[in-house]
Image 1 (tube, rainbow, N blue to C red):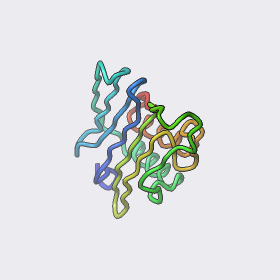
Image 2: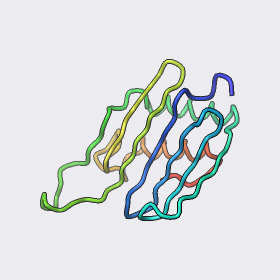
Image 3: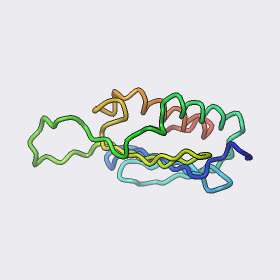
Amino acid sequence: MGDWAPVDLEVYVGTFAGASYGVWWDGEHLVYESFEPGYRNRRQAHTIPSPAQWRRFWRTMKEIDVWAWKPHYEPGERYEPAAVIRDGTHWSITLAWRSSRVVASGDGAGPDDVDLDASRTFRCLCEAVSRLTGGAEFA
């Protein structure tokens, strides 16, 4: 893999009530997992991204400024009573490449919006992860 492979890569997005996805680098392969609601019916696949896929991934990470993401993102003000428990989408990323490292997560919010569904930056991350896996669904 040379200089394109990450030192560390683990990305997760999902919710108990819906589909969930995870991707991590095991040092030789990219491991992709998907789960149905309730974290049932786990499916796993292994792939080795090409140097071109890695280059595009790292270019996207630079474009979305992933290295500057805050450690955690929370949604905006709640509109329902405080006693109501949300089952929102949780996501996390641990990424290290060359001398850069980021560890970030969120609960219903993304790096550029308090509503994860409106976060263009988070969508770009998910699209980049999907491309890196060869087009597997991610988010």
